[in-house]
Length: 61
Image 1: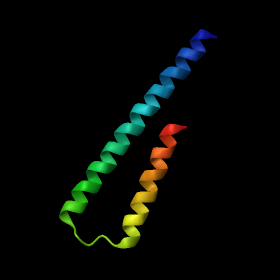
Image 2 (image 1 turned 180 degrees about the horizontal axis):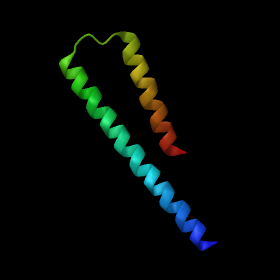
Image 3 (image 1 turned 135 degrees about the horizontal axis):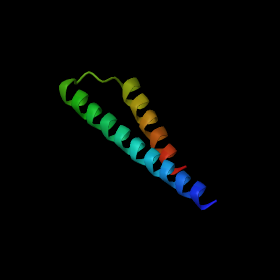
Image 4 (image 1 turned 120 degrees about the vertical axis):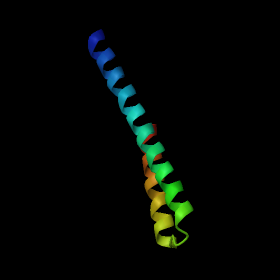
């Protein structure tokens, strides 16, 4: 049983790191795109916010 717990904890830690790395990449990409393009519409701004919010909520579960 302890081996299963260790494996599960390792998997959770791996997923948390992968999720954080993905969020960092998306944030960096968004910043790069925002700096190079001033034509973000209201819709794309809202969509980006909703996607980011959803990803942040996933990290709490």
